[in-house]
Each structure stands twice: as C-alpha cells, then as structure tokens.
Length: 574
Image 1 (tube, rainbow, N blue to C red):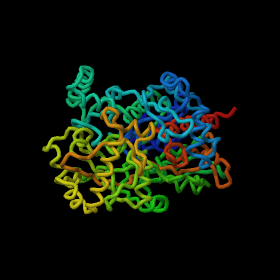
Image 2: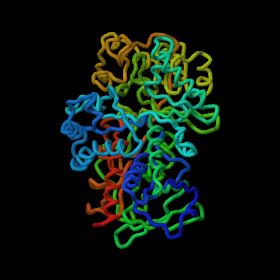
Image 3: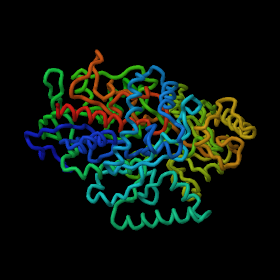
Image 4: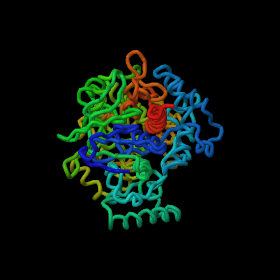
C-alpha cells in the first residue's frame, strides 16, 4: 500500500478500478475486498487519520448466520433474523434490501477471515436490543474484533484515529468490557489478577516507545486489522488529507472525480465506480439543521470527518436520500466536559451506568421520563420527545463507587472526585434537596422519584416504565447485585450525585437510497452507474431503528463487499 499525504503525489493521468471516498470501517472494507481481487484501488480520506467513527466505537459487528454464531447459538437461523428485522422495522426499509444483507453476511465474514487479517469472535451473551420481539436472540449475531498488536503496523500505527481518551486508562491503555471486569476484580481472584497484570505490564512497556498503548481492542482493533490487511496490497493507494471537489460524468454515469487538498487538484478516472463511505451528514451544518433540528453539534461524539462534502455532488448526479426512517440518526445520551487542552469530551453513556441499580434519570421537573434500561438510541429519542434536555443521571454514593458515572470511574476516591466536582461535570449533594438545589430542579419531585424507585427496588417491579423486564435490559443491569431486579436498586446512601445528559447523535440513519448491491438510486429508483454508497452514507437498512449492537458496522462491511464486487465486475466486463 502506498500512503500519500498530498494529492500532488498522484500522477496526472491516475486511473483506478475503484475509488473509495472515506476511510472508516465500511470504506476500508470496500477497498480491501476490491484489493484482494487484484484491482487498483484508491482510498481517499479527508482527515489525517483512518478509522472514522468505527475507530471510536466498540467495534461490535452484527452479522447473523456466521460460523461464529453456530458455536454459541446453534439453533439461530437467518429466517429468525429476517423475522426479527421485519417485526422491528416493518416497511420502513425494503425487505429485499435487508435480505441481501442476510444472504451475504456469512460469506463476507468468512472471506474476511480467510483472505485478510480481520478476525472476529462471538460474544457469549449480547442480546438484540428489542429482545421481546419474535425472532430476537440473546447471542450469536453480535461479533467483536479480536484484539490486535498495533506494533505490527510499524509507522502505519500513527494513522489510526485514537480512541476517545476518556475510554482509556493510564494514559492511553485501551480496555474493553472484559478488561474492565478483570481490573475491578484484580484483588478478588487469581484469573483477574493475571489478566490485569498482563495488560498493565504490556502498557508499561508500550509507553517507553509509543504515545499510547499498542494493545488495540474494540473499534481500534477492527480498523487496525483492516489497515494491516490493506498494507499487504501494493495495488492500494491511501490518500490522506484529501477531499472530493467534483464528480466526472459521462451522461448519467460517474467515471471519475476531482480530488483536492488546499490549492492542489488532481483528476482521477475510475473504471468500476466510486464508493461513498464518508460517514454521513452529521457534521454538515445545513443538513444537520434540516434533519436533526435542535440537536447541538457539540453533543455529537461521532468522528470529525462526517461533513457530507460529497453528498451535494452525489445529489447533482441524481442521488436521493432514503425515506421513512424512524429517526434520521442513531442516538445515545452523552455527558460533556472541558478537557485541559480546551476541547470538549463527549462521553456516550452506553452500558456502564444508567441501567444499573442505584441509578435513575429525571428531567428538570425532577420526574422520570424514560426506562433507564432501554437502548441508548431509544433513551436519546425519549429525551428529545419529552423535552428532557438536559436530563440528570442521579445516583447515590454506593452506586457511584460500584459503577462509576460517566467519566467518573468506579472506585473513585474523594481526591479522584475533586476535579469533576470543581469543574461542574459532577454535582454532589449531602441530601437530595441539596442536590436538587444545585441542579435547579424541583426538589420535592426528585425526592418523590427516588422514593418510588426505592419502593420498586423492594418489589423488583417498575410499574411506571417497566425497567428491567427484557433480556436486553437485564443484560446491562447487574445480576450480581443481589436485587430482585438487576436494573433496580435503592438510592439510600448519601451523598448523592448527578451528571447532566444530552442527546448525542452517534451516526446517520438517513443516507442515499441504494439497491441490494449498494448502487445509489435516483428519484425514479434506477441505479446511477458507477456510484455506490455504504456505511452511514447509505440509507440504513434498519430504517432508523436500533435493532441490535453493531447494526452500523455489520451492514457497512457486507455492503462494502457487495459494492466492491459489483464495481469490480464493471471494471472487468466479460
């Protein structure tokens, strides 16, 4: 693989079989699948890093029906998965498009694992998010990338977008949920001690030579594996810090594009097609105002490259956005904190705190408005639907110590809490009345809400919002807490704490309408020759419904493959 940092290094007569715009997970996968077929591939990335939002994510990849699924859930079938998606999504997206994903998912995972360095393993238990619907499963469909040794990348290691700093420990050591559980139990059992010691010693050694840890997990591991695989192909060129200035067309067919970086421009011809994988519209001011009204860009934790620069060009070529989505974006509650360098940390509250015993969420009236154990997507949507912005995640001292809250980690000492209290990220009250006063919320209602939760913890039943009634909700609770409901626990130990929450868009659900090969469609529903969309540039096959963990990355990989396969066939006609 050749890495270019300026478009002027491209030859004036550059011609490729496939050009991929955007080096996130879906774009890198599309480039890789074309590369292993021997095609000449140009991968264009407008930032200095590869990875996009995938690099910042957990890297979970939802693909039903793989050989991994059979090892943990042998009774699951593709017809079950299709039924689940039909129950969850209905007619928001074409069933044929979802079926194309299901039909090719296992094939894509097998191809990746046999022809590239991309490797997965199944989660032992990772339920579909709407686990009370027919066709859902508790495990087998959600895969995670195997950890990767970043040292194998050599100088390419510096090209991977670093994870969100607040998701790391000890100055850049990445940890996944397995690591966190072992670290919390370090002094409690031998297995956790050994696991923790191994990763801690590795990180200590890394810091002697690297700015951060090289043991990569989650989304960083997936991106590293894709990059390592691409690096083995001399027929791949990666152009960083490069934008798309124009599409070249012959009639309605896309035949090339103009690339630019500053004042430098290069025209590039393409035989097979152009794949849009730029990450979606989320950081385009006008599209954001139109599609996500009221959602401040400051609340978005997604990658910085999602500016939709190429979307206007695609629309000029006849592309149209898909319609009928439940939501134009996928959501999560986030909390905000200013870093020492002046930037803002945007921290998504996925599974570590809000659904645990001893936690509840209220609005400014001091009242609950949502099932705290629902999926982060539905949580974020409920915040907006009820006007609960900001909302307040409240816990007592026991829950704070056991689970942490947002950027405050479990087991935090008074000294550890001091900076969070000083800058206002964390609010503390000796009593609920004092906490309410500091937050400027209704004290009587907050007290009443806590009293209700305490009663519900005693019975194990939440009659107001049915917290903890599904397998998904129970999975992100705490089954070791000894409570009647793993999601419910009393708030009874002073002092009390709170963090403000905002609805953060974590990715686009609305994108360009496509067919089953990821070919972009025009207003008449006809494919635009030579133009493809994958990842968040493609209208989500989930129709804005967050059905399961990894439902952006899984389809991104599969349709990245389908786009590459179709474009490769165009580049080498019979």
